[in-house]
Length: 329
Image 1 (cartoon, rainbow, N blue to C red):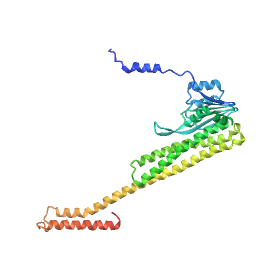
Image 2 (cartoon, rainbow, N blue to C red):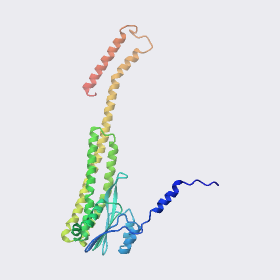
Image 3 (cartoon, one colour):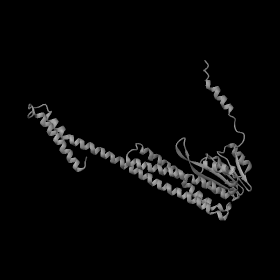
Image 4 (tube, one colour):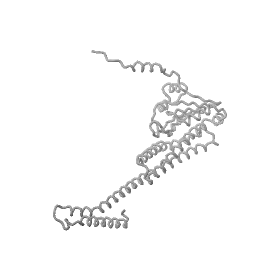
């Protein structure tokens, strides 16, 4: 059997794979202050999960939830820690779609662990500020893990409002395109806006209950004079939900309005075409009568052609004036 030619790219591809070394150390970022550690592990994999199991004695079901990528928002309470799963909106520029970024968190008396399964700019930014700004770190960490938890979640909730603002601006632009008739892709824009609102509602709806559970369990890790902060989280979540409810009604109204506008423009087109057809109908009848292959009166007259043309023109003017007076043209 003849040997097949070898691809020139095969050896190069294997060499490139061999050059890329596998990680042997877990990627664990830690910021600590007296009495509190914040551990951030972005996109935890096997190495990071092994590191967690070696350093913390969490429940096996919690580790299973960390490995899973499809958990609903929830708050599980244990004797010495809380396990929290939250979802936050994240716009994926690659697919141009709004997705849910899951963040798993462990909260204990002297530690807080965040495990986002997708990069979240708000968490990265706050973590880096705490790492580089000692004054900010002391201000946040001195109030305990509960306040640090509030600050992280509050920043993530606040980050959703600019996204909601963009959806609102998009709906306003769609409304202008509907009434000006300048947008050729209004139906597609409405469909995209509806999909974004649906995805956003899927993120916010189950999270409202999780925030209420978190508000009930906050007393273990937050001082009594700071409990109003967790009420603020619920207010922010409810405000986002109210905006989504409003957007849902708006986009449904825009869809109905666009269908009515399309039907109206179609009716206008048919009305004009019908009026033109009716104007030329008597002319067609006259031309058909005098075009028959039988003798007709005045067919040999020199002025018959011009008389017929004059009559036809008078009929066109009369019918057009009648349609104009009735508002059909």
